[in-house]
Every structure is written in C-alpha cells, then in structure tokens.
Length: 132
Image 1 (spheres, one colour):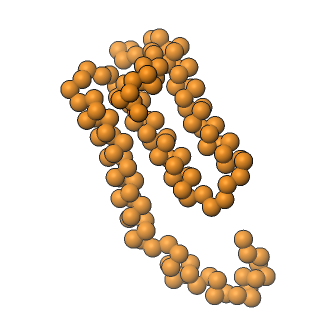
Image 2 (image 1 turned 90 degrees about the vertical axis):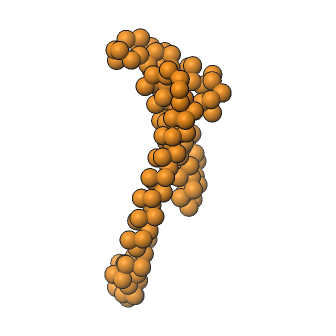
Image 3 (image 1 turned 120 degrees about the horizontal axis):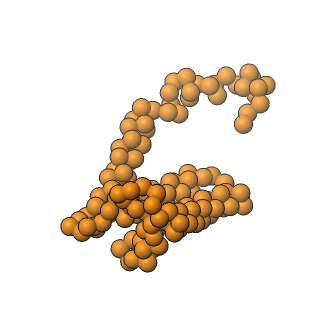
C-alpha cells in the first residue's frame, strides 16, 4: 500500500489505472476462456470415465466437486505472493473439511434425497482407483 501523501506527490502512480494498463479486456476474456476450459475438463473427464455405466448423480458429481475444489485451491496457491502459516491452515483445512464433511454426510444420510441416495458414495469413491 502507498500512503496518501505519496500518492499526492506522485500522481503518475494513477496513470496505469486511468489508462487501463493494469487491467485489459483481453485479460478478462482469457480468464473467462480458461475457466470455461477448466469446467469442460472437470465435467468431461468424469463423463467419459463413467460413460456407459449405471452411476447415479452422486457418483458422477462427487469427482466433479472434488476436482473443482482442487483446482480452486491450486489457483489460490499459484496466485499467492506470500505464504504464511495462516495460508497453509486455510488451504489444508479447506481440503480436510471437504473430505470430512463428504464422508460424514455420505455415511449418515440414509434417505436424504429420494429417489437418489448419497449414502456411502464418498466412501465408495475414494476406494475406487477411477476417482483419482
């Protein structure tokens, strides 16, 4: 951060923002295309992995959700400039919370959403090599 006095003394610091040098529309569209590509990969890798099988919506969605979480956490790791113990706690804690919650929800939710049933889905998924 720059102090207000420095900004008043050096108005040229504002020029990159005023001239749109710091943020270009091409950067926005590249980010959109990258996100679209990642969403296609997150969907079609499980789709073709389970193609022709009789998996239900939870067995199909669990690898997609896990892949999305891993991609989001990887993006945060790539874009982070500094690393403190707080960063590590949040990143590792997010991944652990996801797996603990998914395992607990799958192990206790016997009749949550009929006709589909998330019971024991995550437990089956993590024991299947196709999940990884």
